[in-house]
Amino acid sequence: MSFRDFLTDRIGFIVIYGFNVILIAAVVQLDLLGKNVSLDGSNIAYMALLSTAGLASFLVLDYMRQRGYFQGLQMLQQSGLNGGKPEAMEGVISLPAGITREQRIAVELLLELYGAYTDRLEKHRIAQDQHQTFVRLWVHQMKTPVSVIGLLTEQPHGAANEASRRPVGAVLESIQEENDKLRQGLDMMLHTARLEKFEADLRTQKVDLLQAVRQVINEHKKACIRYRIYPKLIASHEACYIDTDDKWLGIILHQIVSNAIKYSKSKHDGSKSLIITVTKDGSGCHAVFQDEGIGIAEQDLPRVFDPFFTGENGRLVAESTGMGLFVAKEACRRLGHRLEIESKLGEGTTVRLHFPRSGALHEGLLPLK
Picture 1 (cartoon, rainbow, N blue to C red):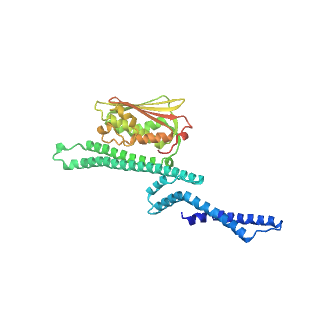
Picture 2 (cartoon, rainbow, N blue to C red):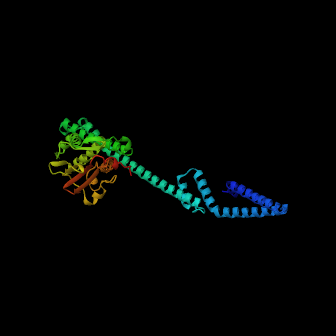
Picture 3 (cartoon, rainbow, N blue to C red):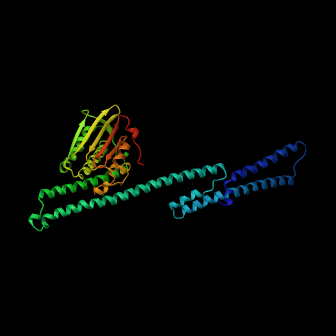
């Protein structure tokens, strides 16, 4: 800010000051007239000169005192205008603290806005990095089922002799298995995308937890038969109604049962069981899923809900993405439910879902971190 701009902003103050000088001179003149005395022109001019000099000195000193602050603002403005680069916002940090209270408040406000801006930018960057990582991982995993399906469809025509050809039923079953992997991968991509607009896709209602669990088990019936996994549902009541979104509840239950099947089929020791217990008490409804799979290493348990974390099991099971439990945990957090997991390596995993009584759902609706 130039000195001219500084004076322009204070033109009202200067005018009022000059008017006050004239008013004082007029009052003195009127008082002296009562005594048959009057001020001559030289005295009035001297008074005006002294007042103007005092005002000018004050304005110059005040401008010099605040010039550093004005220059900092001007540099910040120029750096932001030249190209509109986001990094120009970093100049806020170097702004002088300000001289007047008004300037100090303005600087503090700018620093708070800059802090909020950087926090939001960092969250956006993390979300973008996670999305890109997930897309790359998802594309890589989708390539495997597509390649296997391609080999299976070519096998009956490209086999060297009849003995080397697999039965049509076995080929179709393998294609179905790979198709299930494709479907699950596509579903995971859709669920992750919907999680970003969770509130827009939410519809709460009374849902029978037992019926929802039965439906998910039926959807995985073929996979359970294929891998000799025997689900068993134990319920303390004929029905257990909870306040939730039926679609998101299905996604959560699907992910838990899918994980139980995925990590149980890798354990080659005959048939395995999947026990699901649904209970109800004064605090709400509870669902416990106990499988006899490969379990989770103790050091991996604290991180199983982190996005893209697969741990030791990710090296054993190729289709592990590290996103399933993350999506389930986030959905539970936003719905006001609670998801807990405990496991012992080589023995199996237990997943607990807790649904509070009616009325607690809306208290649990929280934004995505």
